Amino acid sequence: MPGLPLTLVYDAPLECPAQEVLRSAVENLVSGDRARPFAARVTISKAGDGYQASIASAGGTARVLRGATCAEVVEGTSVVLALAITPKGAEVEAQRPAGEARRAASPGNPAAAAPATHGVLGAAARGDLGTLPHATLGFGGQLGLERSRWSAYLAGTYWMTARGALANQPGLGGDFSWWTFAAQGCGAPVTGPLRLDLCAGAELGRLSGVGVGVANKEHPSTNWAAASASLGAKWAISGAFRLQATLGVAVPFVGRRPFTLDGTRVHEPTAVAARAEVGPELVF
Image (cartoon, rainbow, N blue to C red; front, side, top):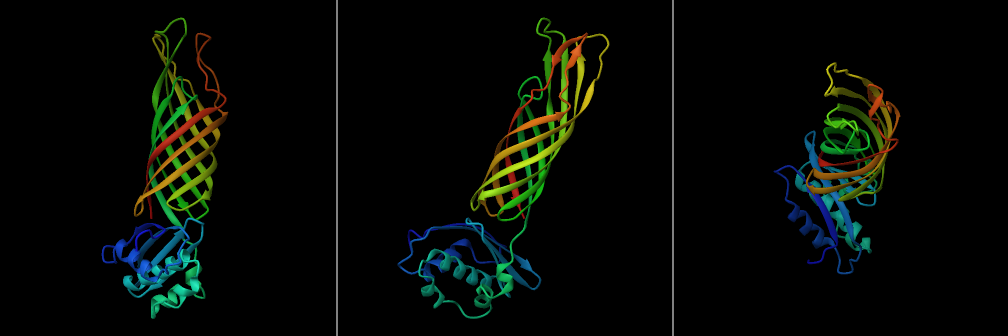
């Protein structure tokens, strides 16, 4: 049935029916009076001796279906999706499949209401403007937990070295290095294949400098702590793989100190630094 208003991200073991089979089953159940667009992520995995489907909708609702075979779980999932698309849900209800998949899709089944919690593993290229003498690129990773409306992450970043110089003596200055660890919590006002996250957190680290162009090189360093806030977007690409991009700011409250040579300031971090990052993520 062309024009089915279903945006679907599907991830399942190789032995399970393909995404086209699930879409076809939904089309067979949806009446001609369908009009409601629907977006969902369907993740099917082994669960003991059977299979389990986690259905997360763009509206933030989640459902878990269980069955003895993957085909049964896919059949039950098609019922859930068809009911979500069709305004006249009773028409689809009358066509519900028999067997375990039908019982699994029933709202009366406690397992159907279980929310899904996922792990998230990612890598990122990060940019900072304001902490070091010029815009700096960093590389790191993050590990977190995610549910339909919230997530929490731990992240680490090593920032590339940046050089600062005295304004009147370009040959004198310092090379600055920096690393950070961060923790943040996020709320998701928009979920589904495109997820938006509003995040706040804190980071700790170490900021160091080493003199350049001087006979006696000093190595001053300072502890670093900052509060952060950001807006992020995550795009589901295929199965459990997605891309994320974030824009934000960081406000240091420890470590914002001047680095000097012979009493002349070489560099001092700004009161507010701009941040950006982009990278892949794996949802499991």
